[in-house]
Length: 492
Image (tube, one colour):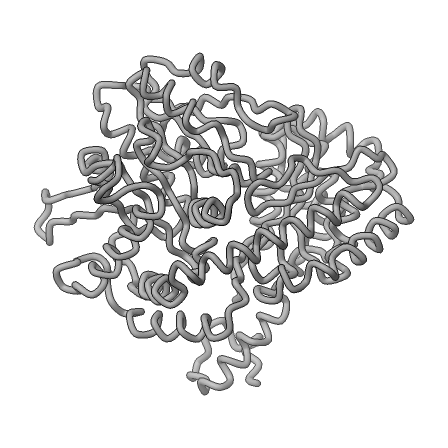
C-alpha cells in the first residue's frame, strides 16, 4: 500500500485504485463494527444477507443524479414520491384515512427533518417577532439545534423521573401566544418511551398550534410492533391534532444513511417549508429541503431497500428485534446492581445502577473491551446516568452471549472501582464557566484525559465521561466542542 503520510493529503501523482481502497480499508479497521449485532448505537443492521450489496448497487446507479431539479431527473422524483407514500401509509395517512392529503419530503436525516418542521411552523406565523416552540426535556437535541439556527425560543417541559414522560398539563401551561410548534416523541431516543402524543396533540390543537411528532427513531418500528400485538399508543396521523411527523428510513427501515422523511398532514402545512428565490440573474431556486444539490444515491438505496424487504420482511425484522429487546432486558434484570430505567416498550433497552460500587462509565468501558459497544448517557436533572442500547434485528442471534459478557463486565467494573477525579478537578468542573475556558486550560485538560496530540479518542472513556458528568450542561457543551475540535485537525 502506498504511504502518503509524508506526501501530503493530495498526492502529487494519482494513486492506483487498489491502493486507495487499501488505505480506506486500513482506516476502517479502527471503526466500531457496523454489522454483527454488537454495536448498540449509531448504525442499524438488519442482518439480511445481500441487502448491503443491493443498496450499494442502487446507490451507484443514482449517485450522480441531482435532486436539485426534479424535471431533469424524473427517476429521483418518482423514487422520492414512493418513499413518501410508503411512510405516509405506514403512519396513518393517505387515501381512505382521516388524513388523505398527507404530503412529504425526503431529507438527509432526522436533524434536517426536524429543522424543516420548525422552519415551516415558524414561517407560517410571520406576524410573530419572537416565535417559540414547546418540547419535553427528552425531545431530541436537534430541536435545540433548530431553535438555535432559526432563532426560535425553546421552552422545555421536564419529564417525570419515573415515567420519563412530560406532564400534559405542564405542556399546556408552557404554550404561549408566541408558540408556533409543540413537540412529542415516539419514542424519545434516550429511554425509548412514547410520549402521550394524543393528549399533547389535543392541547396543541386547542391552542391553535401545530404539533410535530418526532418519530425519527421509532416511526418505522412502532407500526410493525403494533401489528405484532404490542400495545403501541396512538402517535401518528390517526391522532387528529398531529400536523407533521418525521421518520428516518436509515434507522428501522434499514436503508443506508442518510434518508429521512418529513410528512405534513396537508399541502398548506408544508408550504412554508419551501425556499424559493428569483431575484438574481441565474436560475430560480426552489428547494423543498435545506440542500439544493442532492445526490440521488441515498434515495435510490432507500427505495431499493424498501422494495426488497416489503411488509413481510419488516414484520419479520420487527419480531426479531422485539425478541432481542426482551432477551436483553432479562439480562439486565438478572444482573445484581443494575435496573431498567423503563420497561422496554419499543426498540430501546436503557439501564442504570443505584450501586455506588458500580461505576456505569467503567462498565461501559469493560463492555467495550469485550466487544459490546454501548452508549453512556450523562446525569440530567433528576435522571441518573444510564446506558442506552439501540436494538436492531441483527442483535437477536447474539442475545444469549450478552448476559455472560455483562456479568463479566460488571465483575470487572466492581473490581476496578469507580473513577475518582482529583478534588481540584471536581471543584473546577463544578465552578468553571464556559466563558472562562482558555486555550491553555483546554489543552491541559485534554492532555490529562488522553485527548491531545491528534491520536484520536482514548480506548477507555470512563475518566472523560466522569468529568463531563460532573460539569453543568453548558460547560459540558463547551468542553466537548473543544475536545472534538482538538480531534478534528487537517491531515497535511
